[in-house]
Image 1 (cartoon, rainbow, N blue to C red):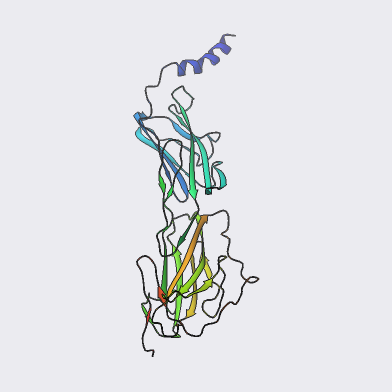
Image 2: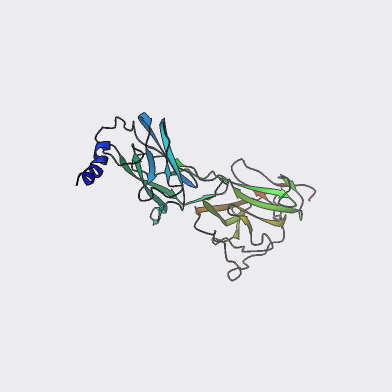
Amino acid sequence: MLNEFLITALPITLLATPIENYIEGEPKIRCDSDAIDINFQTRQPFNGRIYVKGRNTESGCHNEQIGRHLTGITLHFGTCGMVRLRSLEPRGVFLSIAIVLSFHPKFITKADKVYNIQCFYMESVKDVDNNLEAVELISIFVMQNAIMPNCRYEILDRGPNGKPIQFALIGQQVYHKWFCEETIRSAFCMIVHSCFMSDGQGNRINVIDENGCTIDEYILDDLEYLGDLIAGKEANIVKYHDRETLGFQCQISLSIKEGQCARPQCENIRKRRQIFKIFSYLIEEKGSQSLSFYGYE
Protein backbone atom coordinates (compact mmCIF):
# COMPACT_ATOMS: atom_id res chain seq x y z
CA MET A 1 0.00 0.00 0.00
CA LEU A 2 2.89 2.35 0.78
CA ASN A 3 4.46 1.84 -2.65
CA GLU A 4 1.16 2.46 -4.37
CA PHE A 5 0.70 5.68 -2.40
CA LEU A 6 4.15 6.98 -3.31
CA ILE A 7 3.66 6.33 -7.03
CA THR A 8 0.29 8.05 -7.01
CA ALA A 9 1.58 11.05 -5.06
CA LEU A 10 4.65 11.69 -7.21
CA PRO A 11 2.98 13.66 -10.03
CA ILE A 12 0.96 15.62 -7.50
CA THR A 13 4.18 16.75 -5.87
CA LEU A 14 5.69 17.78 -9.21
CA LEU A 15 2.68 19.92 -10.12
CA ALA A 16 2.28 21.48 -6.70
CA THR A 17 4.74 24.34 -7.39
CA PRO A 18 3.05 27.07 -9.46
CA ILE A 19 4.59 27.93 -12.82
CA GLU A 20 5.28 31.65 -12.85
CA ASN A 21 4.95 32.16 -16.59
CA TYR A 22 2.22 33.28 -18.94
CA ILE A 23 1.62 34.65 -22.44
CA GLU A 24 2.07 38.36 -22.99
CA GLY A 25 -0.45 39.83 -25.40
CA GLU A 26 -2.19 37.75 -28.03
CA PRO A 27 -0.80 34.90 -30.14
CA LYS A 28 0.57 36.07 -33.47
CA ILE A 29 -1.01 34.07 -36.26
CA ARG A 30 -0.03 34.25 -39.93
CA CYS A 31 -1.77 32.48 -42.79
CA ASP A 32 0.81 31.68 -45.44
CA SER A 33 0.11 30.19 -48.85
CA ASP A 34 1.11 26.70 -47.68
CA ALA A 35 1.09 26.78 -43.86
CA ILE A 36 -0.26 28.36 -40.68
CA ASP A 37 2.36 29.98 -38.45
CA ILE A 38 1.62 30.56 -34.73
CA ASN A 39 3.94 32.44 -32.33
CA PHE A 40 3.69 33.23 -28.61
CA GLN A 41 5.53 35.79 -26.49
CA THR A 42 5.99 34.65 -22.86
CA ARG A 43 6.86 36.63 -19.73
CA GLN A 44 9.64 34.22 -18.69
CA PRO A 45 11.83 32.02 -20.92
CA PHE A 46 9.65 29.21 -22.23
CA ASN A 47 10.56 25.73 -20.97
CA GLY A 48 7.54 23.80 -22.13
CA ARG A 49 6.03 22.29 -25.23
CA ILE A 50 3.76 23.34 -28.10
CA TYR A 51 1.80 20.67 -29.92
CA VAL A 52 -1.33 19.92 -31.92
CA LYS A 53 -4.08 18.66 -29.65
CA GLY A 54 -4.27 14.88 -29.80
CA ARG A 55 -0.95 14.58 -31.70
CA ASN A 56 1.60 15.20 -28.96
CA THR A 57 4.06 12.55 -30.21
CA GLU A 58 3.49 12.80 -33.96
CA SER A 59 6.44 14.02 -36.01
CA GLY A 60 6.06 17.60 -37.21
CA CYS A 61 3.14 18.27 -34.87
CA HIS A 62 5.05 19.43 -31.79
CA ASN A 63 7.84 21.82 -30.92
CA GLU A 64 10.05 22.29 -27.89
CA GLN A 65 11.88 25.62 -27.76
CA ILE A 66 13.62 25.82 -24.41
CA GLY A 67 14.87 29.08 -22.93
CA ARG A 68 13.27 31.54 -25.35
CA HIS A 69 10.73 34.29 -24.77
CA LEU A 70 9.35 33.95 -28.33
CA THR A 71 8.23 30.48 -29.27
CA GLY A 72 5.98 29.03 -31.94
CA ILE A 73 5.18 26.33 -34.45
CA THR A 74 4.58 26.16 -38.22
CA LEU A 75 2.02 23.65 -39.51
CA HIS A 76 1.79 22.89 -43.22
CA PHE A 77 -1.47 22.21 -45.02
CA GLY A 78 -2.54 18.56 -44.97
CA THR A 79 -0.55 17.66 -41.83
CA CYS A 80 -1.37 17.01 -38.17
CA GLY A 81 -5.09 16.54 -38.78
CA MET A 82 -5.65 20.09 -40.00
CA VAL A 83 -9.36 20.38 -40.84
CA ARG A 84 -10.31 21.77 -44.26
CA LEU A 85 -13.86 23.04 -44.79
CA ARG A 86 -15.07 24.57 -48.05
CA SER A 87 -17.39 27.57 -47.89
CA LEU A 88 -19.79 28.62 -50.64
CA GLU A 89 -20.69 32.03 -49.20
CA PRO A 90 -18.24 33.63 -49.01
CA ARG A 91 -16.50 31.35 -51.48
CA GLY A 92 -13.26 29.94 -50.08
CA VAL A 93 -11.72 27.42 -47.68
CA PHE A 94 -11.50 27.38 -43.87
CA LEU A 95 -8.47 25.67 -42.31
CA SER A 96 -8.70 24.89 -38.59
CA ILE A 97 -6.44 23.32 -35.96
CA ALA A 98 -6.22 23.21 -32.13
CA ILE A 99 -2.87 24.08 -30.50
CA VAL A 100 -1.85 23.30 -26.91
CA LEU A 101 0.67 25.59 -25.22
CA SER A 102 2.07 23.71 -22.22
CA PHE A 103 4.48 25.44 -19.84
CA HIS A 104 5.80 22.13 -18.52
CA PRO A 105 7.68 19.74 -20.87
CA LYS A 106 5.92 16.61 -19.56
CA PHE A 107 2.72 17.51 -17.74
CA ILE A 108 -0.43 19.55 -18.18
CA THR A 109 -0.74 22.41 -15.68
CA LYS A 110 -3.37 25.02 -14.88
CA ALA A 111 -1.28 27.63 -16.70
CA ASP A 112 -1.59 25.78 -20.02
CA LYS A 113 -3.79 27.04 -22.85
CA VAL A 114 -5.60 25.51 -25.81
CA TYR A 115 -6.11 27.72 -28.86
CA ASN A 116 -8.48 26.94 -31.71
CA ILE A 117 -6.85 28.52 -34.76
CA GLN A 118 -8.82 29.20 -37.92
CA CYS A 119 -7.76 30.73 -41.23
CA PHE A 120 -10.00 31.63 -44.14
CA TYR A 121 -8.65 31.74 -47.70
CA MET A 122 -11.03 33.46 -50.09
CA GLU A 123 -11.05 32.30 -53.69
CA SER A 124 -10.45 35.21 -56.01
CA VAL A 125 -11.34 36.03 -59.60
CA LYS A 126 -9.58 39.09 -61.00
CA ASP A 127 -8.72 40.64 -64.32
CA VAL A 128 -5.18 39.78 -65.28
CA ASP A 129 -4.21 43.43 -65.57
CA ASN A 130 -4.84 44.08 -61.86
CA ASN A 131 -3.05 42.90 -58.73
CA LEU A 132 -4.94 40.18 -56.90
CA GLU A 133 -6.29 41.33 -53.55
CA ALA A 134 -4.82 40.13 -50.25
CA VAL A 135 -7.33 37.87 -48.51
CA GLU A 136 -8.18 38.31 -44.88
CA LEU A 137 -7.28 35.77 -42.24
CA ILE A 138 -10.10 34.96 -39.85
CA SER A 139 -8.80 33.87 -36.45
CA ILE A 140 -10.17 33.74 -32.94
CA PHE A 141 -7.40 36.03 -31.77
CA VAL A 142 -5.72 37.82 -34.62
CA MET A 143 -6.77 39.28 -37.98
CA GLN A 144 -4.01 39.05 -40.57
CA ASN A 145 -3.56 39.15 -44.33
CA ALA A 146 -2.69 36.05 -46.31
CA ILE A 147 -1.19 37.33 -49.55
CA MET A 148 -2.31 35.58 -52.69
CA PRO A 149 0.11 35.25 -55.60
CA ASN A 150 0.58 38.21 -57.93
CA CYS A 151 -0.14 37.37 -61.55
CA ARG A 152 1.24 38.78 -64.80
CA TYR A 153 0.66 38.56 -68.52
CA GLU A 154 3.39 38.92 -71.14
CA ILE A 155 3.80 38.60 -74.90
CA LEU A 156 7.16 37.08 -75.79
CA ASP A 157 9.01 36.91 -79.08
CA ARG A 158 8.63 33.53 -80.82
CA GLY A 159 8.43 31.17 -77.83
CA PRO A 160 8.26 30.72 -74.04
CA ASN A 161 11.93 31.66 -73.64
CA GLY A 162 11.73 34.79 -75.79
CA LYS A 163 12.01 38.38 -74.68
CA PRO A 164 8.95 40.56 -74.00
CA ILE A 165 8.08 42.65 -77.05
CA GLN A 166 6.18 45.89 -77.66
CA PHE A 167 6.17 45.99 -81.47
CA ALA A 168 5.29 43.28 -83.94
CA LEU A 169 4.64 42.54 -87.60
CA ILE A 170 1.43 41.05 -88.93
CA GLY A 171 1.86 37.27 -88.94
CA GLN A 172 4.81 37.33 -86.53
CA GLN A 173 4.95 34.34 -84.17
CA VAL A 174 4.66 35.29 -80.50
CA TYR A 175 4.04 33.49 -77.23
CA HIS A 176 1.25 34.51 -74.84
CA LYS A 177 2.25 33.79 -71.24
CA TRP A 178 0.24 34.05 -68.00
CA PHE A 179 1.93 33.26 -64.71
CA CYS A 180 1.65 33.85 -60.97
CA GLU A 181 4.35 33.94 -58.33
CA GLU A 182 4.90 30.55 -56.73
CA THR A 183 5.82 29.78 -53.13
CA ILE A 184 8.14 26.93 -52.15
CA ARG A 185 5.09 24.73 -51.73
CA SER A 186 2.39 26.08 -54.00
CA ALA A 187 -1.07 26.01 -52.43
CA PHE A 188 -2.99 27.53 -55.35
CA CYS A 189 -4.26 26.55 -58.79
CA MET A 190 -4.70 28.98 -61.68
CA ILE A 191 -7.16 29.05 -64.59
CA VAL A 192 -7.07 31.65 -67.40
CA HIS A 193 -10.53 32.39 -68.78
CA SER A 194 -12.96 35.01 -70.13
CA CYS A 195 -10.53 36.64 -72.57
CA PHE A 196 -11.67 39.21 -75.09
CA MET A 197 -10.21 41.60 -77.65
CA SER A 198 -11.39 45.18 -78.20
CA ASP A 199 -10.49 47.74 -80.85
CA GLY A 200 -11.05 50.67 -78.49
CA GLN A 201 -14.08 51.78 -80.50
CA GLY A 202 -16.67 49.65 -78.72
CA ASN A 203 -16.15 46.49 -80.79
CA ARG A 204 -15.37 43.39 -78.74
CA ILE A 205 -14.44 39.83 -79.71
CA ASN A 206 -14.51 36.94 -77.25
CA VAL A 207 -11.38 34.79 -77.58
CA ILE A 208 -11.45 32.38 -74.60
CA ASP A 209 -14.72 31.47 -72.88
CA GLU A 210 -15.63 31.35 -69.20
CA ASN A 211 -14.47 27.72 -69.02
CA GLY A 212 -10.98 28.56 -70.26
CA CYS A 213 -11.48 27.11 -73.75
CA THR A 214 -10.74 28.84 -77.04
CA ILE A 215 -13.62 30.21 -79.06
CA ASP A 216 -11.66 30.78 -82.25
CA GLU A 217 -8.44 28.81 -82.72
CA TYR A 218 -7.44 31.08 -85.61
CA ILE A 219 -6.84 33.83 -83.06
CA LEU A 220 -5.60 31.76 -80.10
CA ASP A 221 -5.77 28.00 -79.60
CA ASP A 222 -6.40 26.22 -76.29
CA LEU A 223 -3.84 27.19 -73.67
CA GLU A 224 -1.18 24.82 -72.39
CA TYR A 225 -0.66 24.61 -68.62
CA LEU A 226 2.99 24.01 -67.77
CA GLY A 227 2.52 24.08 -63.99
CA ASP A 228 0.05 24.96 -61.27
CA LEU A 229 0.49 28.70 -61.87
CA ILE A 230 1.68 29.07 -65.47
CA ALA A 231 -0.06 28.86 -68.85
CA GLY A 232 0.78 29.91 -72.38
CA LYS A 233 0.33 29.40 -76.09
CA GLU A 234 2.02 30.33 -79.36
CA ALA A 235 0.06 32.45 -81.82
CA ASN A 236 0.52 34.60 -84.89
CA ILE A 237 -0.14 38.32 -84.75
CA VAL A 238 -3.37 39.47 -86.42
CA LYS A 239 -4.89 42.92 -86.82
CA TYR A 240 -8.19 44.74 -87.27
CA HIS A 241 -8.84 46.61 -90.50
CA ASP A 242 -7.82 50.25 -90.15
CA ARG A 243 -6.80 49.93 -86.50
CA GLU A 244 -3.29 50.31 -85.08
CA THR A 245 -3.91 48.74 -81.69
CA LEU A 246 -6.39 46.44 -80.00
CA GLY A 247 -7.06 45.66 -76.33
CA PHE A 248 -6.67 42.12 -75.01
CA GLN A 249 -7.86 41.23 -71.52
CA CYS A 250 -8.29 37.99 -69.56
CA GLN A 251 -9.32 36.91 -66.10
CA ILE A 252 -7.33 34.60 -63.85
CA SER A 253 -9.08 32.52 -61.20
CA LEU A 254 -7.05 31.36 -58.20
CA SER A 255 -8.36 28.55 -56.02
CA ILE A 256 -6.97 26.53 -53.12
CA LYS A 257 -5.12 23.46 -54.39
CA GLU A 258 -6.74 20.15 -53.48
CA GLY A 259 -4.75 17.31 -55.01
CA GLN A 260 -4.04 17.91 -58.71
CA CYS A 261 -5.08 21.20 -60.27
CA ALA A 262 -8.16 20.83 -62.49
CA ARG A 263 -7.71 21.96 -66.09
CA PRO A 264 -10.24 23.04 -68.75
CA GLN A 265 -11.70 20.14 -70.74
CA CYS A 266 -12.13 21.76 -74.11
CA GLU A 267 -12.40 19.02 -76.72
CA ASN A 268 -16.17 18.69 -76.45
CA ILE A 269 -17.08 22.34 -76.00
CA ARG A 270 -14.84 24.16 -78.48
CA LYS A 271 -16.96 26.36 -80.73
CA ARG A 272 -16.24 28.58 -83.66
CA ARG A 273 -18.09 31.88 -83.29
CA GLN A 274 -16.36 34.38 -85.56
CA ILE A 275 -13.53 34.44 -88.07
CA PHE A 276 -11.62 37.67 -88.62
CA LYS A 277 -8.78 38.02 -91.09
CA ILE A 278 -6.84 41.01 -89.77
CA PHE A 279 -6.62 42.52 -86.28
CA SER A 280 -4.53 45.01 -84.36
CA TYR A 281 -3.28 44.27 -80.91
CA LEU A 282 -2.66 45.89 -77.51
CA ILE A 283 -2.06 44.37 -74.09
CA GLU A 284 -3.70 46.22 -71.21
CA GLU A 285 -2.47 45.28 -67.75
CA LYS A 286 -0.92 46.77 -64.65
CA GLY A 287 2.63 47.76 -65.57
CA SER A 288 0.97 47.89 -68.94
CA GLN A 289 2.55 46.73 -72.16
CA SER A 290 1.44 47.73 -75.60
CA LEU A 291 2.01 45.94 -78.84
CA SER A 292 2.01 48.15 -81.93
CA PHE A 293 2.61 47.37 -85.57
CA TYR A 294 5.20 48.53 -88.06
CA GLY A 295 5.91 47.79 -91.69
CA TYR A 296 2.21 47.62 -92.49
CA GLU A 297 0.13 49.82 -94.70
